View 1 (cartoon, rainbow, N blue to C red):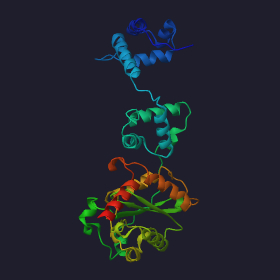
View 2 (view 1 turned 45 degrees about the vertical axis):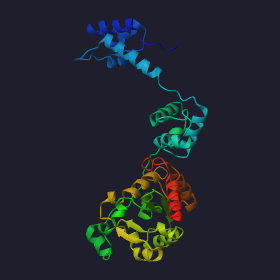
View 3 (view 1 turned 135 degrees about the horizontal axis):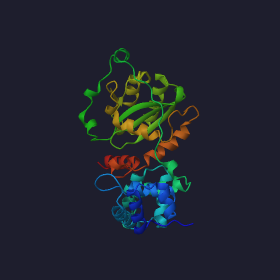
View 4 (view 1 turned 90 degrees about the horizontal axis):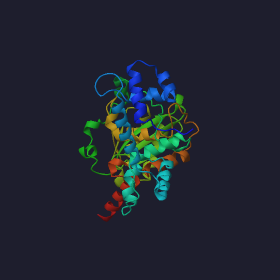
Amino acid sequence: MSYSHLSSEERRVIFHCFMYGVTRAEIARRLGRHRSTISREIKRGARRYGPGYDGIYAHEQALAKRRTARHRRRVDNAPLVRYVEQKLRAHWPPEAIAGRLPIAFPNRADMRISHEQIYRWIYADSRDRGVLRRYLRRGHVHRRRRRRLSALRARFPDRVDIDQRPTAVDRRARFGDWEGDTVLGRANSGIIATHAERKSGYLVAIKLPSRHAKPLAEATIQAFKRLPKRWRRTLTYDNGSEFADFHRIGRATGLSIYFARPHAPWQRGCNENLNGLLRQFYRKNASLRDVTQSDLDKVVRLLNHRPRKRLGYLTPHEVLRKGLCVAVES
């Protein structure tokens, strides 16, 4: 049996029955409707002023809602559908997809869609038992606990505080300023060192064999030596014990290393944000023991090729590559 919308006459009946205290079940029986239909209608048709049900107002609202729904844009452009689904499967968020379309298709007015439409599309797909929703960002991973201030000062007596860092770093005025952190799996089951370049948001992530300072220093030195020297200016860490070998990192890479204040993650906001992006792939309470560097490289590649709103929907890879070209030309 197909569903039909309530008519103005049916709403008039509901109004009079409601006024005389007729139960919703009885109203439904008289109209040949399901009880839940009547309950929803009474809830939606609340009076504009005061309690009760206003049949005329309810009918006006229903017609307006139907007109709005009729004018919603349907996604029936096959190339657009393919592009959006491809980027969703590459774990791009809807806002990045919508923002990237004018860059990817500057002369194609038909290749446009808002991020709200993409979200509606995803949730409609989910109601039809589709799989697109699984590609939305979600999940968290365990982070290590912070140490007491007294213990941190004892561990790093010669640390250089973030207050002494060049002001150009805060302004994101140049390439080569990095923030570093680590991400832990459940019950210390694996550790990932993450480094975020502040200007571009470019991510370098390394799977570590342990949380000790020596392997972190060795892996960090190896990773940063692959980068051009002009991209190795400063590195800001938090106060974890795994960063105790920071002098060695600085000497080997040429990086000037600074430390954020304890319990101040906003002083490394770029890195914190990228760690949040990693959580889409390594969820809360997930073990990282079986994650290989090859697995991690695939995730990092996805993130470095994902458009970012603050970059004008360019990708970190594009921004960093453009910066290298400008530096070479100058």
